[in-house]
Length: 204
Image 1 (cartoon, rainbow, N blue to C red):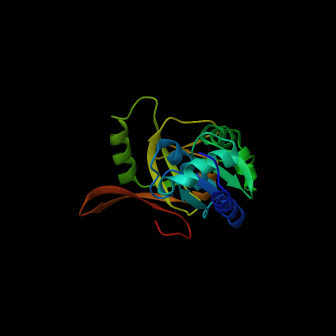
Image 2: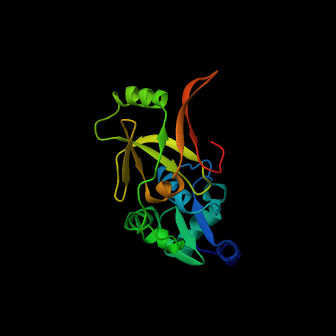
Image 3: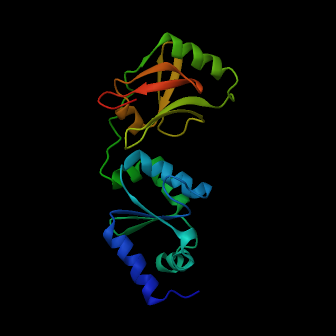
């Protein structure tokens, strides 16, 4: 399928009008493939606001962006008009720290944060970790919109570790910065028991 002028102009306008433009399957809140979800997860660590285009909603753009970028797969990321690449390249840049650098973020002097963890939360977490896979660890992620989440994952490159109240917590470098001074408590609702992360200056 050849790239017609109208589709080329639409793609170029999206790139020109948005500092960070991601062509993906689905939307930022609802990725429709694992590769798109992975790129969204990485971008969310660095950028509070960026634009996505769902190529599944437009067959012309879905095929046209491949010719436009001379790149055969989706997702595709542009930053300030420059084509960055697809999921594999973005992952490499993320792990090396270069992706952060493209957004003006310096990760070289990040240290593990000071965190408070209540006794009740620590007890519940330790109980849950007894059935976790041996190679997984508990992570606290805080994205660019200061939305916090606790999750299990295999620690990757550059991950920071801190032990508090008998629990080992792991952080990517930017989450470590944003989590400084945070507290984690056990919360009970009609839906059951969960954890609440309080970030200084932000709602938990």
